[in-house]
Length: 277
Image (cartoon, rainbow, N blue to C red; front, side):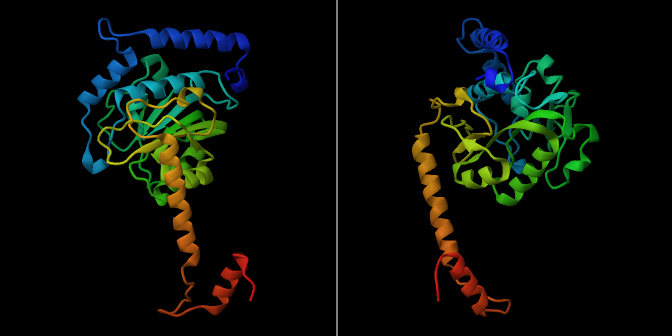
């Protein structure tokens, strides 16, 4: 897979060995990976703020995402040629799980100014403001983005998608999380698809899926933390999407007036659906 993403076979083998050694690093006597332990410590010291819709991933999910990011997004990998590795857009828990040297070539964009007051790579981000308000040197400067908005609605995702396009270099990679029901919208806006691995977000009242714009073998496995069948979740979400789409297509087409029906608009809709007068 690495060779397909721009690495030679030798480079891919070396990176795989490095990833294996990093994964093997554990806190003595705990059996917990260093990344997972540091993520747990960061979460404990940064309480979620309900008014900001902050919900942190579990430490184990953070560890898995860090592995994917290290494999595909950090360093000279992929087709995207850019000076910076990754823009963590509303995903601070992932950014701060990286080693300091890794963070130096990435940036975190977040609304919560208190998360990284001493972190040079921390920048204020408000999705309601245009991406052009960010430092000009960030435009097209990233090989990848990791996104988790505070809301799941289309209007919010459209703004995040606009920011992602502004930040990414051509050929840049995307990792994002949102509900499975958003799969058609996510494919449309960002060209991403859901994976088998479902992220654990302990305090979130509904289950998210993890989307990528690239093949990520590490996300092919089921997450033991999440007692949900990913295939069933995605099937159910698709069925719900199709049902909503069907209901929308059957809704009466009204004109501009209050309660008025627009015959020409109704005829046009019928023709689009394959009906003939």
